[in-house]
Length: 203
Image 1 (cartoon, rainbow, N blue to C red):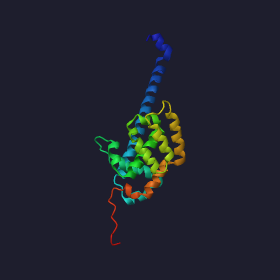
Image 2: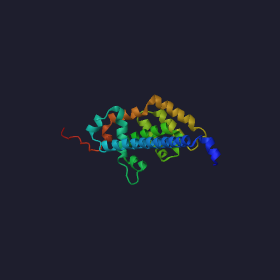
Image 3: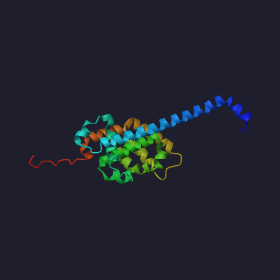
Image 4: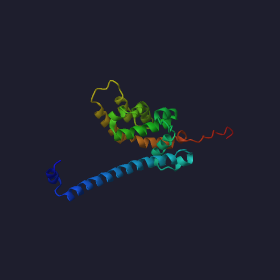
């Protein structure tokens, strides 16, 4: 760049340097905030997993309804192999309730963040059938039907946006995460890491 062109762009040298420094400082601040946000999210997830790593009846009963499904999901994520975490290898081996709640929790969040097309083309899509079963179990049959249809291999091209809208509308009515909370409250024994005492035959 010639001296004339540089002068045209920046005026005098000091104002040009100031502009460059200002842009550089803004980039540094932006990267810092982005990194802090990622660390905060990762830190919160790790805190939840540590807090709910071993789910006892007393711990489960003490969790507020608004935090219950996230707490159960954190308990299940804590069970993954840290060296090679793969939820699809671990979660389906657990109780029906745990598998259902995790599948619904993960799918609802994935669809809210990225939509059906992204869901179906990531490892999360492996949970489609389990999530549909789970949605039926927690009282969200319309959500389940939309999800099953999205997984149909013969689905016409371009049909996913309409199914995404159907799922979202059904979720607003059926509230599947609230259904998960109700299921956990009604079936606590399916979500405990401690052994449930057998009934006393004499009692």
